[in-house]
Image (cartoon, rainbow, N blue to C red):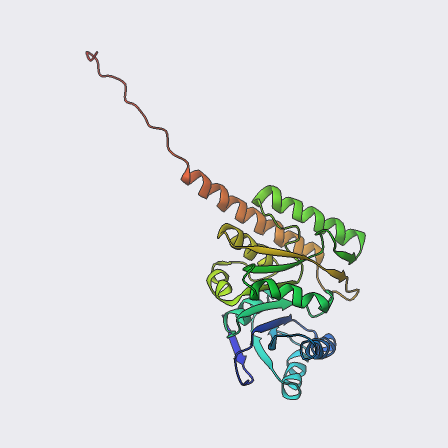
Length: 267
């Protein structure tokens, strides 16, 4: 995996481990981590660790992360030498000792008040996976018409091509039971932006319970996501999973029984 991890010792394993995957986010990282750290050390009822998963940043992100780990308690650093949001999340989840692993984007576009409703269904045993949704009834979203159209179109495609039942596969706000993550993540082939979708497809095919939480979400005006490149990657991923699904379905169909023609002279 090409990963080096540094774990700051804590008295005991936390209940929740929140990963923030980052690539060249030296300006955004510190404000986001400080805000999240203050929140989980305030009224949040579960012991929590924040993991900064740096996937091959080339700016001062690593230095900022180390500074935060020295200054704040319960900060873990994971450093990878290869890019990929999914690679960063996977590396963090698979090396965590928490009961529940989660991740959120560094822009904190999802209101932090949704964190407790996100993890509570998993801790209580109500669900195995919990995801934020910008398209579920009750969600309040501020984003451009272009992103709204792309998001809705993509999720319609997922329902048609893959039979996925969630409304919003790509909101950067998810949590899962750690044992479930350890079971499913190694089978997720994509380690970039399609990671979220493929993980949810695997969870649905495994019959796991997925809870979808409507969230308040505000688009980051400084987002560095290349929408065209991400869309193309997602389409390739959907095609791969749809093809796999068709092949598996075809292989499970009963083959017609061929009845040989009677030999000449037989009644």
